[in-house]
Amino acid sequence: MKLLAFAATNSSQSINKALVTYAAQLIDVDVEVLDLNDYEMPIYSSDRENESGIPQLAKDLFEKIGNADALAISFAEHNGSYTAAFKNVFDWISRFERSLYQNKPMVLLAASPEPGGAKNVLAAAVASTPHFAGEVKASLSIANFYDNFDMENGELTDLAIKQELQKVMKSLKAE
Image (cartoon, rainbow, N blue to C red):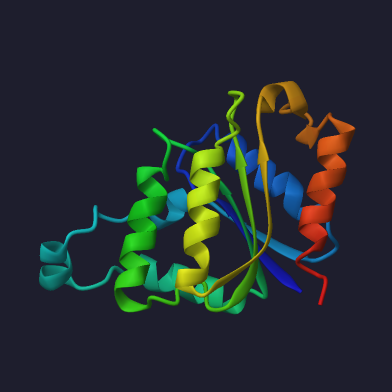
């Protein structure tokens, strides 16, 4: 099984990238961790699309998704919603293919240093993913991230959260 994992943010210090990278290692599969910065494109507008077409980077990411057997995405929350970086990539891909997740089983995660745990963006992602041909197998929000994750060693320190995350990730292999 090939798992494509990424954080839905362009932050170089992303706790969501730390989380999804850690989570991907919890199951025995072939993992590719993407950096959304490698898919930076102009801000979507219909004028830009009409003038220049769809950027090759949008097509490249769509192909990466297609070549994976499953996806794990960890969402950063900006003002209660998706990051601008993720939304832009999402908008570009959905312009040429509404079924952008290509019927892949998915785990959706979110982390926040605050008590809310990025639950708003996670709820939005869980609700919208099926409309874009994604099969949400499980989701998990981790609040107070720095209290529960050792950034230096790249691992969860809270055993109960670790066990829940292992269960969430194993849902990708349960068929």
